[in-house]
Length: 603
Ligand SMILES: *[C@@H]1O[C@H](CO)[C@@H](O)[C@H](O)[C@H]1NC(C)=O
Ligand SMILES: *[C@@H]1O[C@H](CO)[C@@H](O)[C@H](O)[C@H]1NC(C)=O
Ligand SMILES: *[C@@H]1O[C@H](CO)[C@@H](O)[C@H](O)[C@H]1NC(C)=O
Image (cartoon, rainbow, N blue to C red; front, side, top):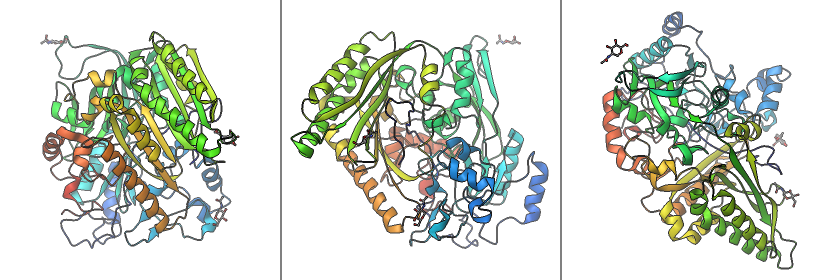
């Protein structure tokens, strides 16, 4: 993992997430079974004449997506291969790549790992001795530039019973935007951005007017959205990840959408005024609180790739204001007389103190990302965080300086504090520009993740148990994300489909573990075992709790309850109404329990 925040926080490599599937897949069944989707490997796959007829009606040629590293096998000296080698961990290069119709952000989702251990991949490292094969990259895709293109693609997929995947950027921690043998609807080039001084939702009464809203096409990425909003002197609740290449109107939003601004302004789904979407019957819908409110509700947290192909989203923006920004970095100091044991004790005391003061931090206006990650050289676990607060939050300085003082007291034991600073900045836009965009990392590596929402009352009641459980995880990366509480907890839990557990939470706990290119099935399974063990520990810590659909494990035993709690039954009913043919199915998505493990055959 190269998610290293360089000393001084010149770059802020923070994880964030969305997803795709493949790892639970089993070999394709033969096509004669009417309960199964027709895959590209099967005789039922549409003929070239059928594809040509479709292509003639589309605005763009059909796509034949390839593996991102393929040029290094077919023409190793080419610019394309050199670009792959240089840009492998650049989210923009991956998401924009025309060769692969924007690959997946994590290569493991482009890889097919069969249950029997057989692996189909295309590794960047050509000397590993594996052939470059299609793996879980779809066979054919539509480069959708209009509602008409999307409707043609959807109607074609239904007519030919194809497995459909929808992708804008391919950022997805569960592989939800790709699948082996599938037909891709790529929304990446729906890049329209419209700023509205006043906005009246379709179907609303004349008196219903919002100010300073922005409509984003579903291919718009966060950096593009931020540019448009900051240019107006405004803020928007959006994703924070290196390079800001995550899609602003795709899976991030449909799964809930957390942000460093969420404690101040709510989740992404709490900031939506209207969405447009094409459903599996080919119909185009404008949905909002006044028009098809059930579908609008489901799209706000019910999960990406499940309801239809989103065309655009209209968000409320917020006034910009001055902020405080805090950075902290510390690690155990094993050079002290007490050695490793004293260092571990000091580090545990430090992290336990951070968990203890987290409710007070939130109340004082702080939000952001704390990360536990082993030092790449020493393998010793370090703690760092990047938080922001409105400059108007009067208690913010005091609570942060108290924490810094507690950390400094621990340095008399066996702790090394490298950074502990608070500074003023004119706006969130300045912070995002300085620390987020232009950075790379987080992508280009094979990882799986797990997560849990930590309720406020648990942190207040038993912070030591929380700290022990988090330190007991064995992943390469643990994010203790302070992205809930505040405004998130003031919203009516039933106003959007997103998990009601968000409304009681303070922290979204996220952990990840990866493997090197070419890793064997046994190595991959060992990582999965660690993810499952971490999940079990977090379930024990928060019985009956929930987590975030976009950043979660593929092994949730009761994903319906864990992702949606009491909202699941209503979501299932809306799914039956709007997608009766079940065209849109993703791993652990609403209705996916009707399908087998690879989501190609109905049970
Ligand atoms: C590529 O794989 C070979 C064989 O395992 C290994 O020796 C080499 O270090 C790898 N190269 C890179 C850049 O990882
Ligand atoms: C709303 O405004 C439109 C355009 O100004 C007008 O034609 C319409 O009659 C108004 N509707 C109501 C219910 O006032
Ligand atoms: C990792 O450890 C090395 C050796 O102690 C140190 O020089 C380096 O600054 C550490 N890196 C981080 C990111 O803390």
